[in-house]
Length: 103
Image (cartoon, rainbow, N blue to C red; front, side, top):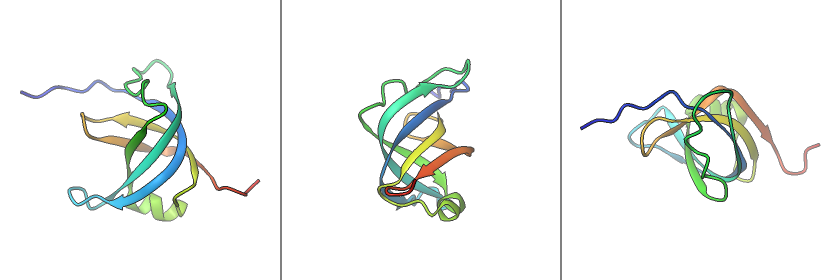
């Protein structure tokens, strides 16, 4: 039996804890985010409202990770969507990266 996902978006803020290759999705990188806050996006369902205070694996396109030079310790603010029980994807146009020590 398959479950159909509804269009959903959440805005998360957190610290990058790890980046790792995804063997099942070679064009993506799994970015583990220590989530500090989760906010709703417009009128979309927020399926990650309980994620604050936890580790969240977010799938980023590999090219985006390289372009952003995303690193462990970076603070990220981004829009994400749940695409099944085990997969969460970043919205490539709604992401900000802050590096420790940069003003």
